[in-house]
Image (tube, rainbow, N blue to C red; front, top):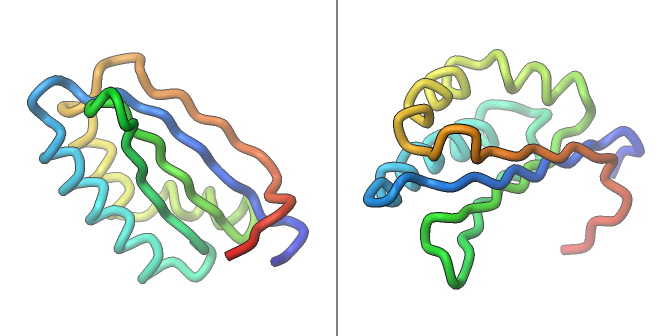
Amino acid sequence: MPDRSVSLVVSVRVLPGRRADFLTGISRNAVASVRDEPGCLRFDVAADTVDPDLFWVYEVFADQEALEAHRRTPHFLSWQEQKAALVVPGSQSDRLGALLVSEE
């Protein structure tokens, strides 16, 4: 794994009753990201075991430039529009860091 790889962890709370719509939309974004972006190395979505409306998204990019390119793709921009109607306003928290260890 290149030394410049970056990881992004996003937490977000979905509006009550919008869980299925959120999962459909973010799944489309995840598939397109990994399939169409050589710099997107991983895209996982996890749900809290207690709160069904709380999610964490984990993404790994080859470098900062790949992350920036991801944020300009049509599928990402489309997802941002869809997501606005599905998540609790102000609930998203993003954490960006250098990827130091990755074992599969």
